[in-house]
Amino acid sequence: MQTKLLTLDELYSHDGAFLVEYNPNSLSRSPMWAFLMFITNKAVHLQFPAGSEQYSRTQYGITWRCWAARPTEDEMQAAPWGTMKRSEDQ
Image (cartoon, rainbow, N blue to C red; front, side):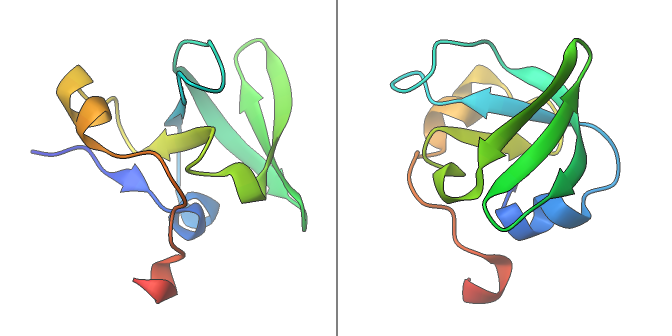
């Protein structure tokens, strides 16, 4: 079964933890589990085990993205980085 890469719209309605992955060309960080706290017009606020952080909505899919479950290395490498379409745009 393939692991689901979430669109930003799907992230807003996702129930439970998800894995945040960082674009290795932008941020040198390991993937981390998080929960959605809230969103604003410009940012997505996430809760991690060690605290909370906010991320730009416009950078979703470019510098950071979320998976519904832990993907394999092959799945992460096969999913291209770039802008993530909104669910209704697909």
